[in-house]
Amino acid sequence: MKQNIKKKSKKMSRKHVLLIYPTIIGEIPNCIAQIASVYQDEGYDVTTAVNTFKKPLTNKDFIQMAEDCKADHIGISTLTYEMLLTYELIKSFKDLGYTVIVGGPHASTRPEEVVLAGADIVIRNEGEDTLREVCKFWRGESHNEDKEELNKKWVGRTDKGLKVPDEVTEKPSEGLGSILGITYYDKVKKEIVSTPARRRIADLGKLPKPNYDVFDHSHFSDEDGMVRGTNRIFTSRGCPATCTFCDWGVFGQRVTFQNISLIIAEMQRRVDMYGTTNFKIADDVFTVNKKHVDAFCKEVVKITPRVEWQAQTRAEFVSPEMMQQMKDAGCYLVNFGLESGDQETLTKMDKMCNVQQNTDAPKQAAAAGLKVYANLMIGFPWETAKHINNTLKMVYEIWDDVFLFQVSGSLVPYPGTRVYDQYVKEFPQFKDYWLKKGEFQKFGIQTYQNTANPYAVSTYYQRNLFDDSYIQDEAFFTYTKEYKKKVAEFVFEIGRHNLENIYQNNIIKQKFLMGVSKLSYYTYKIFPKLEMKLGGFLYEIVKYFRPKGKRANAEHVRSLRRGFGKKSQKEFISRRIAKSQNKASSLSYENWV
Image (cartoon, rainbow, N blue to C red; front, side):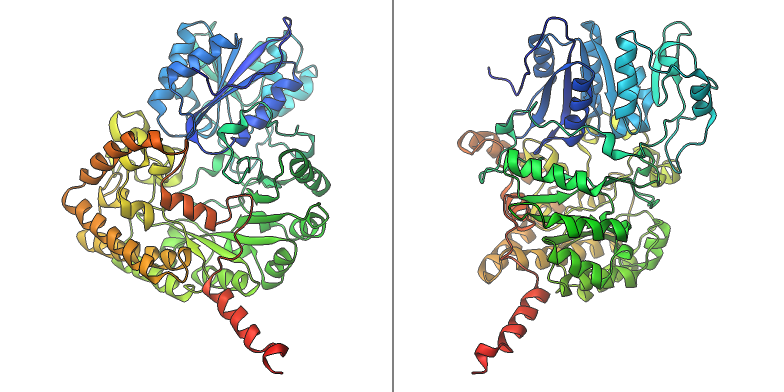
């Protein structure tokens, strides 16, 4: 059976690493592409094994790949999703004698847990420089020659907000004990050891280019030929905010920036090598630095052929002038993390913005001719029907300005977030939920986007309107009937808005899909698992007649409307832009002569 595997030529003297991304994904994971380049710089041959929708992989597949490529080391990237499977995989590799190194958000948040599961080394937080030193250690080379400088780093201050284990070594020791930013099992002391956090990489320009050639592109290619993942570009790292629902401790509050000339050169490289002309700026807050945005906009227009792009940011970091500048430089969509239209909720989630800013930002973007994608979150334990009603008021205020609202946003208390730490004692049912068997293993922001069979874990209305399943099922918190009823109203209003924009000028289809969604909703209320059991069963039959990797139709169409393809689909616009264009057309010279 052909595996999802891509090899590079191997010399007998070179070591080989297998890099694994176990969580199912639809695009090349940039974290693996970046780490692959570091390994290659350090003299390793690299093979990648990515669990994709077009080629789902099991633990058995990963183990077979390691044997096929004769891997010396195994690298695994972790999210808080299906962690029991990941831990089983680590144990299997250890039983076979492999050296296992683990990184990623979950490993950074729960490093001791990952080591107890069998990992030899956990690389915490930003990993490139740490991995280089680990590779040198494996080769028996000196990685910290200046002992005095190392001692200063050991006791020096860490970057603001950076996650650090509760207990770290007081001074460096030999071997792994002299590498900052790792957690490992010390075989001599017979205990888990964590070294202090490594300071963030200030000069992002020294990082190697992500290597997309160690992946099988056929598993990430869209029908239009775009290789997903090559469109994702980072111009900065980090976020200055401290939202309670986010695990911002992985990078802390320090924002570091890439050199603009290097960004443009990398985008041009991807245009030339992969034909990518529609980019997603994947920074947490692209507009946090006005000078950075200004420099980027002035240079990005020099790429040939001219590229389109979208970006994500926060409401308090934009202005009408900036939105227009971005539009003129090829931006077509801005993704705002609004989260709520209730001031109490914004304050309690430590959003550091207000309702007026959340209302103004989409209007400013739409006035500049940009599409707006807005993220909203519900399900916080303090919320009542009144809080949701206030958010709906904001939704109506920006109804014509927003092109699409995110269709998921039920709160998930991820480990490492303040909302988890604040409420886990009050709601002990979700303590260490990622270590519990059953449906807990599938909990994620959008469950149906993280599984090969989306119909087995979600209903029609959850895929088409808004996924409120964690609230209705009380997966993490308990809610009143009044609150759930108001959430249902919210779900249908968000769905109605999105259907009107996705299927513009097709009222019959809008009404039909809304009718089917309502039937799905009320069926779910009476028989929660009925549709999922039936839909999941039917999908297992018809999937052999569908194109490999084909997602749920609602998800596929929504992604295209957002511009996740080779082209941005500019013909689909928000009401505000349409009204503005119609007004301009009616006032044009041709209509007056």
